[in-house]
Amino acid sequence: MIPSWIIIGAVTFLIALGSFLITPRDVKWFARLSRPRWLVFEPLIPVIWTVIFISGAASATIVWQKKPGSLITWLLMALYLVVELITVAYIPLMLRFRSLKTGEIFGLIGLILAVVLAICVLPISFIAALLLLPYLIWTPIGTYTTDELRELNPQDA
Image 1 (cartoon, rainbow, N blue to C red):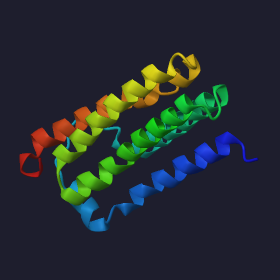
Image 2 (cartoon, one colour):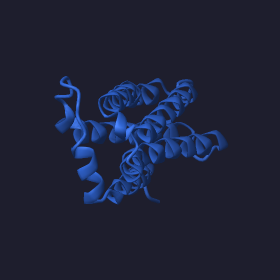
Image 3 (cartoon, rainbow, N blue to C red):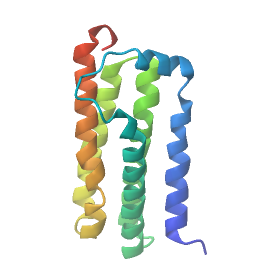
Image 4 (cartoon, rainbow, N blue to C red):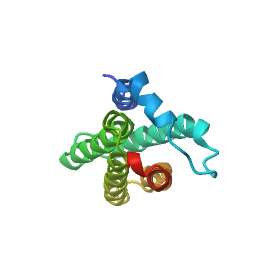
């Protein structure tokens, strides 16, 4: 039998590959946008998201190992999956539609669902809920940054 951490890690990795739906044309649009002066951490964003995805996969693994195969666990795995899908869809959809508002909406939906997930996971495992903190901390920062980009680039809102 394949260990749960390998399956969860593989699913996380495969979904994260969805970010390759970004085309060079889409990236050019985003690169030309004006940015806030305080946005000095932009080169670190891929590293930040890697940490967030690893933490989320670790959280899901802990939940699975606490109550393997139960209906509640399967529902939580589905919620982990939805949160990751929304997270991965954020950038490609924002770039494809050239709409910062789209990115902001997806950021807010992801945050709300992650809060629900953390609340549901907390009674099962405090550590699993704690591992969701990087997402819960970073997502409002990313969403706020997108909102600031909208303010600086109203033609691309």
